[in-house]
Length: 109
Length: 118
Image 1 (cartoon, one colour):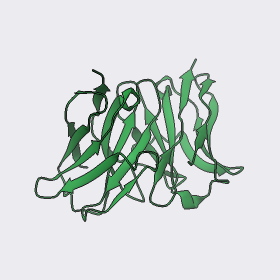
Image 2: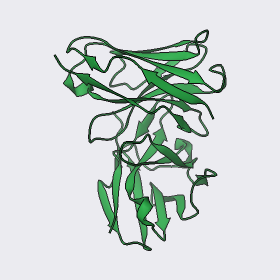
Image 3: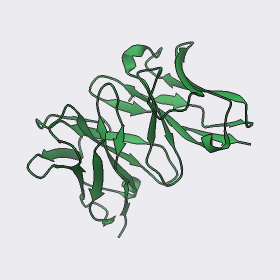
Image 4: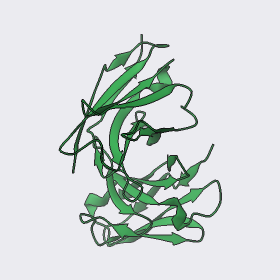
């Protein structure tokens, strides 16, 4: 059973920078995994933020960026805003199956 | 952007079968996309359940493959999930979503809570 691991929780100050990571139990994450990032706020469905590792959707704020970092997927928020407080999930493709990471609860404090 | 709407019973008895339908509107169900089910137990993370293509081809989460069946009805523009032998661990908000390889999860339903309890 493939496991995708994210930090359970992170805290960042308004205006600060934070990096969320996503690791695969199968080894290094590469662009072959069609990596995606989602944001979810309480009571809402997830919202797509980043697709194919580092591509933003038209609605994704410029302060969000995706990358690969040391064998992991990474989502960096630069200049964090209070409205960025949410749960964040990565999503990887393993050939006929998608796997979500466990999620990171980001607190802006 | 398509509109997705889940429907089905909000309460299922243990050992019974959970049945949900997702209505697709504002676009064709026969487009290049995989119609997907995702669930989220209360206070927990997202879990991909599986997907169906308009041709009827399916893919499933290995951990649920033996209990889950996803099907599509093009004439009604909807797709469905059946999950049998349910337990309390299957209590979750169930979402339907449109996935493509390039941009999975662009469109989601609002989600529906299904509780497994007697």
